[in-house]
Length: 388
Image (cartoon, rainbow, N blue to C red; front, side, top):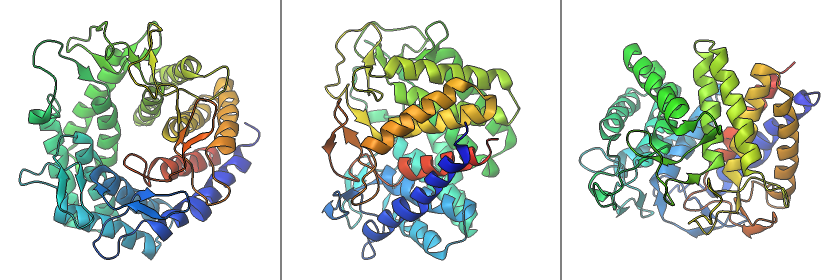
């Protein structure tokens, strides 16, 4: 990729001069702790509820930047704002993390979503390593252990499905566990790391990945069989692509070239499968049999899908030199900077319609926070810096 150095500088500058300053300015709640994430296009707060997984993600982001980019005192203080809020208000008496809280920290939604726990663990780990905070490191390990104990039934008593009729397991948890385990590796026993990563690799690459189609299914029967139902036919290209760069990171630990090559092939397959030939961009959901998807937002173009794709392609190109990665990276890069980036107020829009126009001009909300944009920009910056 001839433009690798130039692109690396672009993503570095966007991260440090645009994205992080946006969140620095508008997100911190200096009164109650934690962060506001419901931000209008210009950064004004439009709702003060606090979503626990976004609190964890933002604290992780600032801690990661402090450790990997610069010992910027304001970054570690921003991270502490979120970590302290999570410690004080984030979990119930059993150590399970709520989904959402009021601005003051009172519980709003029960701890039904295990991803709140996953991102809390990431935040505690990264902050503990950055600040030398043993309490946070201990919390990270305890939370990780709790996640592993809940993985067979992550929603527990909050599961809405009727037991036994159509038991399905989801792709999301083994996907995120692979990344979470790598994040916490310095804190965990080596045997637990190897066992967890081996299981995640098996689930992602042997169970949820259809080797003939090179597509990743979102839901399967517990034995790995496919369900001919809305849930069973669902393909989320962005999820599969994000998992592939997790697999590339996992493969680097043992220099597993076969796994890297397969992950690149699956990345390209999912991009081609999800690409909108008429309006460009990658759609959110598809039905593997071509039926109408259940999700009405199926044809939207989402920020995180495209950002995770840029990361996977950058890593794939650096590790293999595959020209398909370079060609698709440049194409998706052009799409992103044309449609998602906001040249007026900074940061990125999150939700586009099929034609690439912003559906919502918010910069943060219930699902979008200070995570996918800065993490991807950091990853692309550092990855392309190593190309050539």
